[in-house]
Amino acid sequence: MHDNKKAIVSEKLESSGLVFCIKEKPINQILHCVQHGLNPMPVVDGSQKRGIRIDIVDEDFGLFTLTLGSKTISCRESLSDLTTAVAMTKCDDKRLTRKLLAKNDIRVPAQIMYTELETAVSFMEKYQAVVVKPARGEQGEGISVGISDTKDLETAIEKAQNVCPDVILEELAPGQDLRVIVINYEVVAAAVRRPPVIRGTGTHTMKDLIETYNRRRMAATGGESRIPMDEETRRCLAEQGLNPDTVLDKDKEVTVRKTANLHTGGTIHDVTDELHPELSAAAVAAARCLEIPVTGLDFIVPDVQGPDYVIIEANERPGLANHEPQPTAQRFIDLLFPETAVKHKE
Picture 1 (cartoon, rainbow, N blue to C red):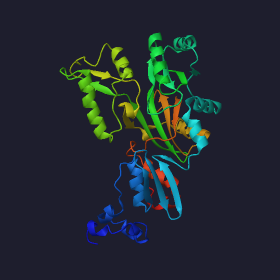
Picture 2: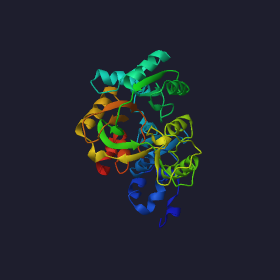
Picture 3: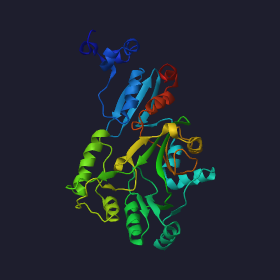
């Protein structure tokens, strides 16, 4: 087996004891690598290196199983059998998430359920600016940030209702958007998420600049991140006296959306080593409160090195591949197959 072409011999070899003798050799890497487009790829690739068998159930939905000996765990991206349906319920509805966190003295922003416009306007005026979001949803869909005008409020509510009939209004907490990844009740990674910013050339329109930005971000994130040219983007541009046809002055920078979600063009910046101990403690407390072994907690913080925060959401299926250099995928595999963790733990 002097080269990989001859080393790839059969499916049976993949599951035999011989594989464990071969896998440590870099020249045989292809022997145990399955071609796939799953997210998170580091979990799949990292599992293969530990001798854990991967079976892809449905690539489009990110479904796969991991098997070691007689133990098999089903996953959907970073969601696994270890997360219970009850834990998912606690994260799925943002109203319930907030209620449970507040009961456990974890700081959360003021929030109301939308029932009628008059009450919603009063809430908006009390806090000067609000976030309007569907009670259930993910990846920033249907969320409008920084609403302070009645007409914009009506539009934002309608937009959120297109995602979920139940809509909530939340006070706009000032600060940075911080995502903290907690695995097995330990903080593994933390990153500040920033809204997408476009820089002008003096010759290109906003639409052209956004398309260029999207090509770059799509290439960098495997197709996950792009700025949609939707009503929310148009609203954010209009607040700054701009529209898609505006030619932006050379070197002028414009924030084209107020949300920092990766899927709507946001960028991620690792701050794990800078995280204040109280923020770490709050993240672990929130995960324990929700009884979820893998989660991404969304904080709003004035400073990642300070103790002040509010938690606005909990994600039961957080992205793990975007937190390099932190070993999120490795800690996820450690959780699923702790018997493999000692040898491979960094």
